[in-house]
Length: 94
Picture (cartoon, rainbow, N blue to C red):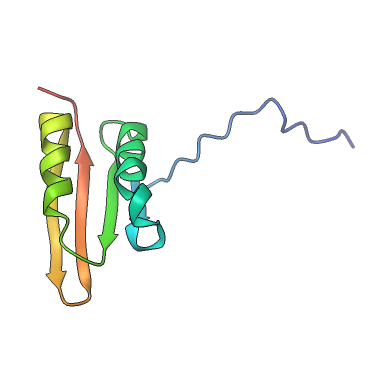
């Protein structure tokens, strides 16, 4: 039996549904915006970040709109006392 050679095989960390969960509550507040922007930059058109946070991140949303323009579409799924759920849909800028 030949050994399995996985060293030179790329691992893309892709999900079949193109939806990537991001729970901001587990990230220190000092690093949250940088982590969120990094994650959004890593996504490709057609992919979605399923974002959860413990509060409505209105200043962050304004920063995302300013930085990404129409490349990222923001869709609120829920807002409440338990937190906020937002889908960030990455699309081709146009």
